[in-house]
Length: 411
Ligand code: FIX
Ligand code: ZN
Image 1 (cartoon, rainbow, N blue to C red):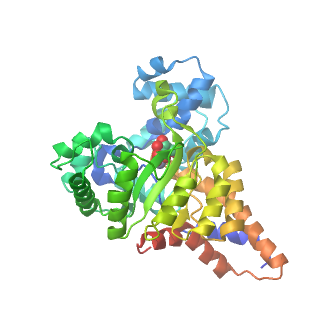
Image 2: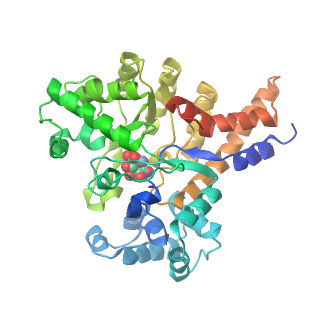
């Protein structure tokens, strides 16, 4: 094969990816789904960057309307400064994808364009531009805005898979057990065997309602397992047994330090190096459970690769959050190929606003093409051979097959 990079680039472009972790919502869940220029600009990644490049204080910013916030971010990060950061460049790429001006002084044209879109058709166009066929949502059964929509029986949507997100239950039981009690589950703060059975009943009821492809939780950098805690008890006695029975994985996203700066809200979370022996203990103690795992700290990536070589019930996924920058994605992906071959999930978008999938997947294709081509080049140098068909198979496996198979879904 003459030009490996060209072939890999073409095959990446032609492939329809499955985006296995997002914060997007299907149209049936109404206004939960965020889209359009004002949402794109008030993304917490950009809010963090605004406070570094302007005199605006968080208090002043939160007292503004969404439109005023978006105007302030556009002026500061796109007019007064060149949008070179990964997150600002992303907005420029989205505007370019829709043929909208990328250097206007104001947002009039962009607002006009997005406000004239019908959501269903817009979703289709965005997915086509992003080269994805479907996404996996993040659904919180304790979210007061979301739960009633599911209880009303939101229509299934083949482009939007559900996930049962369990952060409030696992990480903040003391604050949230009452929500289950008010919903008719006989639980108390102290978890008795009866309480555990009721939590199981809660998980089963919501699994019937949502048909989740996996259950998920983000865990702090201080996460330990085993430990004397309600979280460990809920994992051991309720969540992991439920996942086994339903035949779905648990996704653990480890290493977040929540709200180190609460003044900037969602932008106020940070990262910490985690003790991955907790993960080692989970994979060893629960061999019949499957674990989708993403770790937030750059320093934990090597260990994660090593653990994935030890435990086939562990599937590393994505370059999560602060790692989703081409320089780090390159480093992580090269090491994963060197240690795991094609047996991992390279990326997820973590999109919070619909149109973000366009630039996040463009960046992923752009970053991965030379990495994959280099791996194939080394194989050829060492006497092996590569065909377009084999490259296509690998790309299908990386961006669809590994996930679908690990979750036991067709796809
Ligand atoms: O826990 C998560 O799913 C994180 O991805 C989010 O909470 C985070 O705010 C985010 O948007 C990262 O990209
Ligand atoms: Zn996320």
